[in-house]
Every structure is written in C-alpha cells, then in structure tokens.
Length: 162
Image (cartoon, rainbow, N blue to C red; front, side, top):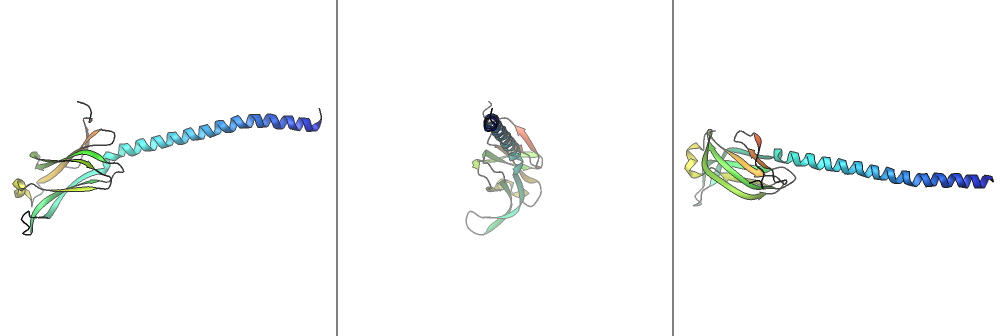
C-alpha cells in the first residue's frame, strides 16, 4: 500500500469515527442544557408563592363623598413573582379572629399590587395593630396557598381538586 493510500485510509477512519462522536457530544450537551433549564423552571415555580405577600399598615383613604380622607388601615397585596397568581382572596382579621369581610380578585399580574382599605364596620380597629389581612391564592401550577395574618405561607388545596 502506498503512503498516500494509508494516509487517506487513516483519515477516512478518523473522519468516520469523528462524526458520530461529534453528534453524541452535541446531543449530550443539549440534554444537559435542557435538564438545567427544566430544573431552573421548576425552582422558579416553587419559589413563586414565596414572592406573593400581603402587608397591612395605617393609611388615609379617600372618602366616598369626596370630603377628604379618613384614617384607616390598608392591606396591600404584592405579586413580586414572574408569573401571575389567580383567585386572590383577601380576608380581614381582628386579633386572631377572621371577620366576615373578604374581597376576591381574578388575577394579580407579575409586579402588580392591589390595595384594599379596612371595611368601615371594622373602623374601630383602624388605629390599632389588631386589624390585619391574610390572602389565599393559586399559582400557575394551580396549587393553592395561604399567606396567614402573621405572614406565614402554607399550602392549601389544589385548584382543581374537589
């Protein structure tokens, strides 16, 4: 066999081996990146409920008759997550007791906040720390959550579970 034939044969063999190896390496790299991306998405979704908060603070709220403002407490719900939350319900509490005053909203978009004043029948609690709010909501995976009146986050029923 001539030297040029040997070089050509060796080059052909290496080329034949190199193409499948390159394809294998590309597929392996793609799979790793896809796995990493799925893990990051799952982590982000698990963190979503922790980024939805409610706080209650003293405020002045415009009177309905337009005659100035009245002192009250305002609950502010903030969705600081990257996904919307759904079926958001705000409950007012007096001390450790939940009241009959609840307000619902269909959705709260990412970065959006929602304010709700203390209902007038509870106005006697406006200048105390006895009136505060809790929320129930559902994340994008339809998992139910409750942010309690003291800020504690806990899982509740799933949206479609009946």
